[in-house]
Image 1 (cartoon, rainbow, N blue to C red):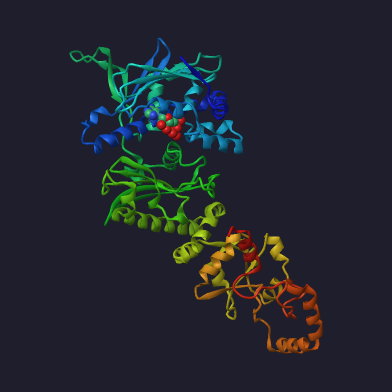
Image 2: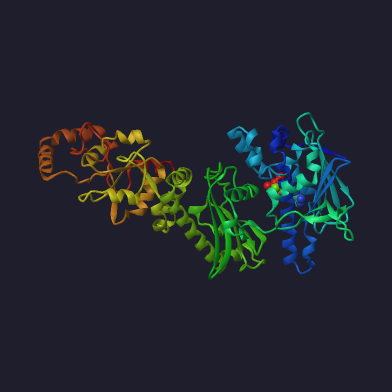
Length: 559
Ligand code: ADP
Ligand code: MG
């Protein structure tokens, strides 16, 4: 039998698991059960869509078997099982699983404490196990396999005979120590309460033999011990529950169980629609920017269920790009199970759902902005840039939808303001919405170009993000007010007298200006006398559509 080493990545995570603090250890059960449920989802889906397979609801369950004598805890599922290759890739390396993302996150945040808050996958079993043995047989495969590891020096895989399809995970509990008691994971009551706490929403029954004292049938006065199999979980998925029954903690633990992010959700929406299309949905606005958000690796999408059966893990068509940060699930009775990725795109139901979701998310964000400014600014700090890209993208097709969600730093308010707040404050005589671009608020604050506008008592929006000006150019106007850069050549804010004086000066200094232009050559287009400067001797100014800052960005772009 061959012994294989874990990948270096996995090794490091394993060490962290094993050394995690005690109070977090119970979450291993949530992780193992959630994998079992995923595996049953997969086979359930096949059974429903494959005519060759017989279908019997009772065949799909998870069983928990504590064994006091041998100090083992077994978790058995009737799911899809694993082939040899799948054992290798799924349990031999964490690269395949969400655990890798977890590790990256932990390295950024300095781990330990946070293990218990997050889904950490199969490996979490080593928090309580000296040895984990997996017996499994995959659907449509004859041969079964045994995988075994002590979590330290690699794992072994060997073929076995196995009658039924599905997976059995046997956890050999660690020896008790002075301050850590692992025997509790063999106690019926403790197991029941862990399962209630974390896995109540699992759609398949989680069964266990439970021994209780019961009055005898013929004699109510005497009690006897009765052992019977019980279903420990409620089985109603959270999204089917009534909002009123659910607490913030319920939504948070669902977010973690689903491993939507390594943060806490900033806010959630629970939608139930019963109209042209029927669906239920739970959506989350994450608190933190996922570390790969602005990279190629990031995939947007929502989990899609058809009447409680998972049909797609990341359905991208349900979310517009400008809301790609949203996480969550959608369940609709109106979708066919056999729907394929290609058909999905053209599916009328899916389009209706996605339109509805887009509207709901937008309204949710607007109400956050109105009612919980602090939260909204936190959100905007993380994802505001995506909204601005959204304004700019698709030739501005979504700009009207998004304009009220934008915030910019204001020269007069010294904080983030919305465009509508800006416009409300505009004095009678102010015609444009002014903005200034630069690297930082400080830099902009000191720009000579801002002097005249500020002098007039007008507010200026500070653009420090590269995408800001592109988005605003696409927007063109807000509430019929055009945007104008304080650096543009034609500010036209001077009074008649100043203008005439300027004309005169221009005549007088004609030779000087020509001379300067000759010296600077083709570095500049023109040298002009300016009336906008107060305390600075010179400034650069751009004419036409492309500002100096935009030009810098455009130059960096690949051709
Ligand atoms: P994740 O669930 O995020 O993928 P895990 O570490 O929990 O990460 O599990 C890794 C993979 O191992 C799963 O994606 C799945 O393919 C496989 N797996 C784990 N447990 C089971 C099981 N009971 N039945 C079938 N496959 C499983
Ligand atoms: Mg898992």
